[in-house]
Picture 1 (cartoon, rainbow, N blue to C red):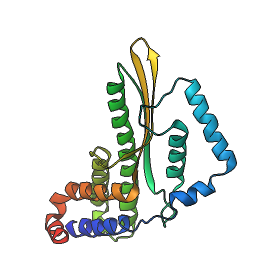
Picture 2 (picture 1 turned 60 degrees about the vertical axis):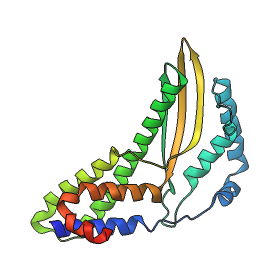
Picture 3 (picture 1 turned 45 degrees about the vertical axis):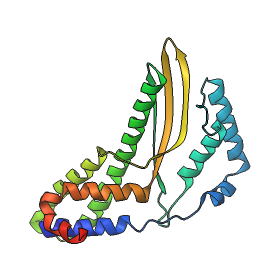
Picture 4 (picture 1 turned 120 degrees about the vertical axis):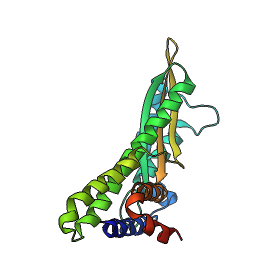
Length: 210
C-alpha cells in the first residue's frame, strides 16, 4: 500500500505542475464584447443603487466587476480555469467583523473547490492502477487526503471584488470575491496531501524532498 500511495502522490504532483496560462488579461479584455461591457456597467449601477460602496483606495466598482469577469474566463493550456474563485457575503456588527468573516468564508469555498479537484485527480490516477485487494484501503486514503485540503489555511489569495453597504441599526454587509491561481493552490494542496499521507509514505517523502 505504501508503494501505491507513493506512486499516486508522484502522479498527482506531476499533473498539478503542468498548468500554464493560455490567455493573458489583455487578450481576454479584447474578447469581452460590447454587450458584456454594457452589462458590467449596468451591474455596477445596480449595486450602487442598492447601497454598495467601495473602501477608499480600492478600484472603482465597474473595474472590480470587469476584473472578476476576466479572472473567471481565464484558462490554462489544459482548458481548465486558471483561477480558483470563492465568494461570500456576510452581515456583521461592523465592517471589520463582517469583512473578516467574509474573507474566511470565501477562502473556505476556495479550499472546498480545491479539495474536490484533488479528490478527482487522485481518484483518476487510482483508477489507472491495478490495486487488487488494496483498492478499498487506497480509496479511503485518497478521501482522507482530499478532505484535509478542504480545511487547510490557504495563502496567496487576491481580491477580485471587495464592497460593503450600511444596513442600518449597526449592521454592515460585506461582499468579497477572492481568487488564487490554480497552480499556486495546487502547490499548497500537494504539501497538505504529503502531510496527510506522511505516515504511509514517510520514506518516499524523504526521497522527493531531498
